[in-house]
Length: 356
View 1: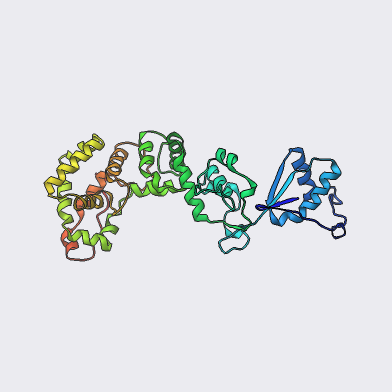
View 2: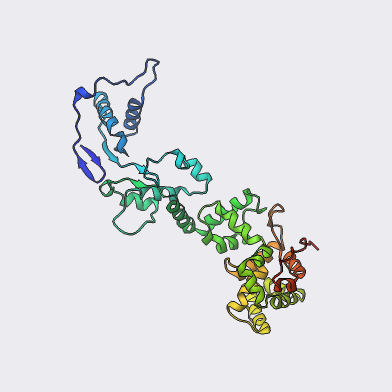
């Protein structure tokens, strides 16, 4: 009896269609069917579950089991895993080994979870399973007959779910070591990493994504942002006035003192700055985000600026990282010709970022 997908089928062959088959080559090298039978039997494998294309091998292996007196395992054959074009999945469709997926930033538990769901489900809408839950819930009876398509986008999403489900200490260690090994940070642990991971983790699906999100936080593409259509709209909405007020707050030490106090200091300063500029809501926060981060969108602005302030006051960020400190950002703001920008002239290239 052969289990095929969710059905139990009786599969039979005529012996005269089989003939004598080779189990040992003339050079003394045993062939696949003999090796796998002995290997599985000596490991006391109770269930052999594999692709339907192995069905012809099952008869040969069953005969070897009987000839050697080994207990016969239960055999199950499931449909092939297919590529997006519904052809047989092969190495031409991408990574082919567990090691390659690990190097790409995938977690072992995410790979197991995703592979288990290719043609199987527990009957609910749940797609997130730990290894322990899979062991408890899996049954061959719920395996689908049709071939499942390997979806790299879904695998990436699932990896993100498992990544963010890690205990904070494990996630901090994993990402911190990645940031150090990639040359962005000089250290792999500490308060800066803990706060950076907390802020940026929603943008990380693969461990390797952490490089991009942190580098993005440390960068300051103000010129490119002001040159964009959305940036030009902001320029026309008195962005220069907010820039002047921001520079005054920086020069007086008011902003830096607020950042030294952390989130409470930042929130108090923003509230007072909004009153001074007679701005609130989006009219206040969008100009501040552009001027301080150089971007139109991103993670929580207050947490971002506090992290940038911390990064600029220590040696956490590697010298080879393209990090623009708050001091350097305000140097850029001083060089902008707002009059030229307001006249819709091509934005001037900001002067070289000064370190003084």
